[in-house]
Length: 463
Ligand code: ACO
Image 1 (tube, rainbow, N blue to C red):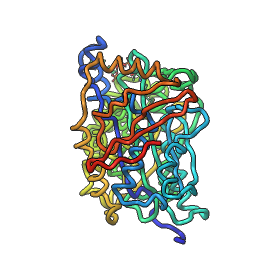
Image 2 (tube, rainbow, N blue to C red; image 1 turned 60 degrees about the vertical axis):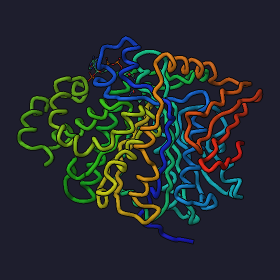
Image 3 (cartoon, protein in one colour; image 1 turned 90 degrees about the vertical axis):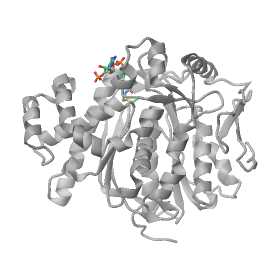
């Protein structure tokens, strides 16, 4: 049994998003929004959504089975499986249990872990649990597996274009190419009603959009301040954005990511950090005496800090924005889809770099934490992770729906949510080989899934 594992972190990743999507430009016109509101105003390009054959369970079955297969991991080697999700299909039975047939088939039922829920933060809680398990005295030498899976859908109205859907699976263990800098971590947890799901009959949240934006930025400020303090105590020197190579944010929509990063620069300015040069100091000086409440409302500050942040943003943030802009908010999976985008874009130059992640879940829970990247060893190396995720190909092979068909799909899903005794269309023509899909929910609410045949014609049994 391995003892005292070193460099614990993410060994492997797989990303899945539905092949069905709608262009934001098309949705904008259909919704009668002013031209540019969704594309420039929110900064989004496209949005993925589940049709009646997909849900958070089918997406996570696909992500997990694909990860195990593509990295050659024996299901018996998994000792802990944790799922983060805020898409409730059952108030008691965890999504994790729906994944167990993959492992039961191989005779492995000795797997700890269940689901974690707090809006978009559940995946990060699951990830921390798995990393902590591997670092703990109860670790038995096997891998942890984390799954983030969500279908983000909103009622018709201004929040609808900020939906999306995806599942991400991450293998956790020692000697990882993405290892945690455990001491560089700070959290901010508080009570807020910014986005919540009290109506259990509906998949849609109750959302106070403006409040959720402010809560997100306040949580970011608080995490960043605590993290800077911790670093400065540990290292005896000041911390600023220049100490980080890349930032990865929970990404409800890209404009908020732009504003968030600019906020870090404003924090650096208030702390007189070295990242802020003379000309930036001049630009931000008029805002130095704002109260923090005033600073969240000031459009002038927003503009000035985004201007100051722009060159840093292009270098340190932009490489992580691809999938969130193309797929939309994936709730728990959103931050890890942003991280996957960074690996996709930069895998060959990431060794030795520090990446800072910010995870936010309404209600609210948030953490900022740091990881260090290194080459790793096949199959657990950065270039293989990029090649397995195959993001460019997955984005390219999607099917764009016209808005009428998208709205119709949303209606079907609304009607089916929480329902029983129906069979789905079973139309898996748009799904890639090896993708799981929902076939039926019976009169006792039991859900049944099948797997689309692989290219070589092999078919795994549904269950
Ligand atoms: N061209 C360019 N930009 C435009 C245009 C246009 N024609 N029209 C509007 N805009 C800009 C606005 O100025 C605004 O930009 P700003 O924020 O820099 O001012 C942006 O587009 C959005 O316009 P708003 O009028 O602010 O949008 P609205 O209030 O209708 O909805 C919101 C936006 C609140 C984000 C809504 O989509 C929502 O509630 N989403 C869900 C909540 C959410 O995602 N919160 C984030 C954190 S919590 C979480 O992750 C769930």
